Image 1: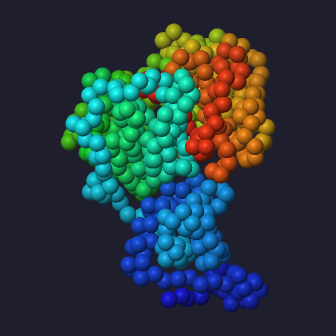
Image 2: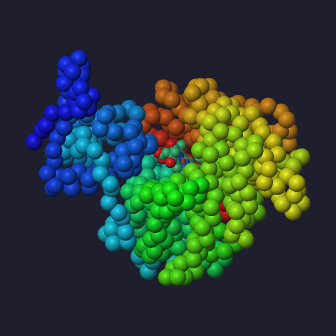
Image 3: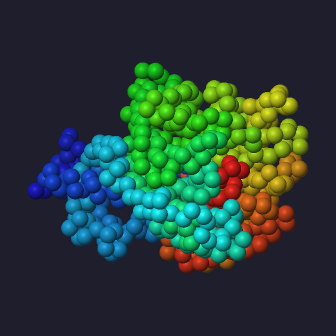
Length: 546
Ligand code: DHE
């Protein structure tokens, strides 16, 4: 079944093979149709979330055949069996894949990737589990938790979320979810929590149960990052939406059961070249409009913002706004009318008016390299009035943008000032309406001192330099990278929580800072806190407070 292949390619292959050592000559397997079908299935269930559907890499390394063939069969099998310290799961020793399946996957990876399958409503339905139907759910809250101050915390490499009581700082429960969960969002009422994994599995968790648990789950594709719920008055808890990286589409689901109702492809032409058809425009951030019954959907590679009106799913109305390519994350201004979102590979912030359903501005002047706001941070700049800010992945800048076109018209939709952060590699910025602090993380900095710290500005004195706080040191965890990531406030806005994100086998923690004094308030340590990253406070997430 095996045939010979040399890395140097057909021309001059014989010469190259002679010069290279024996390890560079290898064997490329052939798979039967049945083997191929099984390998495809396993790949899309287990591998694509991290290594990408076309194996171009994302969380996991890229797996082009130039790499896999060089590694050879045995090394690939070892990797799949034992995993790696860098986060590759141990599919073999954990018992999730059999030795025969591992052998199959190693051979499969030495073949060119195939176009992945589509995933329509039929396929979604086949994965849909209504574990507790609405009629069997409690009619009132069955626990005495202060739900509005609950935090849903991503336990990235465990494929779980921890629900942590914001008052006692105790873990209430840990819930199995999809692989490498990305974000959590709340239904408008705050009763239901929706969590999406990179493998596109969505869990719907009922917070009213004695111990909150998953009441419905569904897989909406092979790879995903975003989920949101209908927030418009009169439509609370009615619908949920999930966007996928593969297939490139979004699906609207029933908010109470997650039954898939409407799937819409995002394939199409790019905004800057009407002749360029893109077969794979991925869905990035999604927010829910407060002005119309609409979801605001970022389509990354084509650069379109779709305003998807959910009033009539059979006669779906979509306003498609030409924005900028490579849209990624973003959030509302403090009035929740304007959506500010980063086209990060284009160093642009796009502003959408969700009341008039129009593009307001594409801001480039003063925007740094690869802006990465998360949902951004809204505050009152003492000089320029209401502003929204983003930090950057590509440099140490923070861009502060005026957001009040009525009372501060001359500052609106302009970068009014730039601040100097800790360094390049920032992912998230955060403040709270009651706070005078602006927090900036730096988890992807190459500098250990920076990625183990957070920076904080005094909003009332933005001319003062950033102050660095050694969060990872305060957590006192022992060895590991201990990257400090993503600030999130409690409901009262007097505490800010940061994750100290360590290796899967190392100790991680959540550090809670007193926002007023900027002093350590608590360190949440627990063996169940495996690789905590994103944290979502129920009240703040429900109300788009950031
Ligand atoms: Fe994220 C938000 C995509 C890597 C933690 N991330 C988002 C959103 C998108 C996205 C599209 C916005 C969702 C929304 O608002 O609807 N993230 C991606 C990627 O494509 C990328 C770059 C690569 C990947 O392989 O996934 C990526 N993200 C990461 C991480 O490695 C992070 C740091 C750790 C982790 O948990 O995986 C990470 N992303 C987050 C967090 C948010 C997020 C915590 C929500 C921030 C918020 O406050 O809203």
